[in-house]
Length: 237
Image 1 (cartoon, helix red, strand yellow):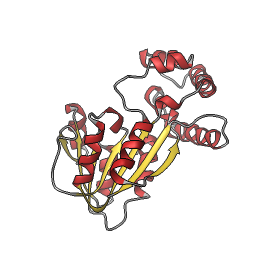
Image 2 (cartoon, rainbow, N blue to C red):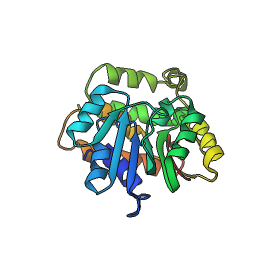
Image 3 (cartoon, rainbow, N blue to C red):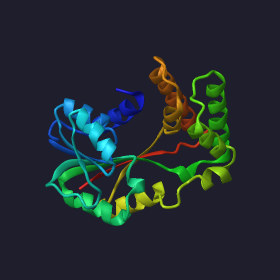
Image 4 (cartoon, rainbow, N blue to C red):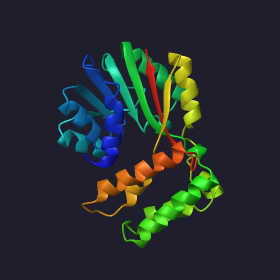
């Protein structure tokens, strides 16, 4: 299990009790998380709009289907997971209402996402410095993805211009969740390590490096040195 999957997995498992039977992951990607939860004994269905991602998930034995939310409907679930996918899904309010309808009484909607809009100059300076250090030690793949990421971290203006305008802000997700479900459990989380994960070179120490970076990120965010952009929400029907 790659570190970035384990980071999400450990968060999700905090809330899935032994009574939780049927789980749906919306935006499953290549299916690593869904496969891990299936191996734990949960009955997991997973959807994604990307054909290649669904094919990869199926190769892991996941019950993955090509579908878009909120069009998907296949009975009721004890938990519905939106793993870094809800910011893409339109319309937001209808998508959250549909999730509530698809949950059993007491069921959970668990969201892992990010507040791209929360970044500030101080945090971007720290992140850009970290990327340059990784690059200098040969740990990052020198490709267009890295160049784009480095360019985006040069200033808050560049960072915001790199933000796709159709994506939902975390604050908007928060508001809509509370409108539908009432009280919502919220927490901040590390997230910048995920950008590093996309450009890091293949090495046997890859996961250890990402874990150390995520832990540093969490420590700095906790003492106010940087602003955390990871956001997590849990709502109960």
